[in-house]
Length: 261
Image 1 (spheres, rainbow, N blue to C red):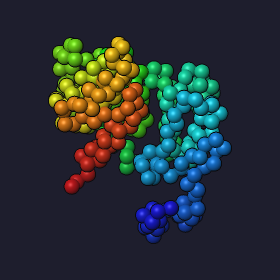
Image 2: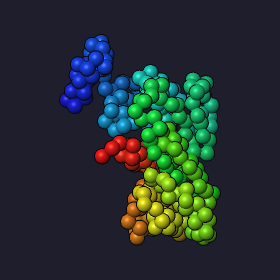
Image 3: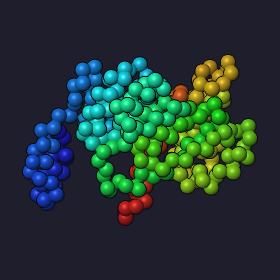
Image 4: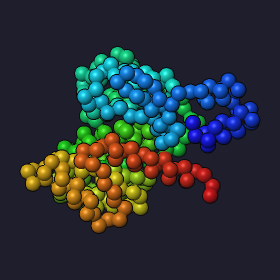
């Protein structure tokens, strides 16, 4: 356990905010759970702000059940990505309060313990798609950001072939603390969005397009070469990563907005 956490616990104990039993329990609590085929990081929420997320593709339902069960037992929320319908059906029997988004392939359970200081303080994220075919990746981003507590709006099918469609949503987009822009083909939409907003734009290239799009590489390279200074890029079809980064940014921005400098 790092010294800063020990110091914080000691301060809370001295102030009467926690009991001696709680103090000793926290000092003795293991930071990794051996679940057989998974070594679950129980300390990630303290270090990084959110608990470990499960990449569900290729994992058995039993493995995901063990991970979710342990996270929820410790009061954390649980999120799995790339979950198929059959996996979700079986998991829903074990976790009836979970939310499954079949388009996104996400399976999420809210935390059993809430931090009152973070209520209504996780910022605003807008997720924008160039086309309807990009929706699965966009929904993965949106569900990830929602699970992290952000208020999320999804705007669909406003690609550069009809730029007036984006302009019709500018008032909503400009209210966001962070934007996720999901596009395939030539990947031009993030640059266009970046020229209109004063927030970070997380560009997510998708594998949507004809042969020369090269499975998303054309969009990836176009986004990496964006002239818009506020555009950063994640991997092809990485909706989870785009949503995660946007939610972290939005949370920090929202925190600054509500605290006096």
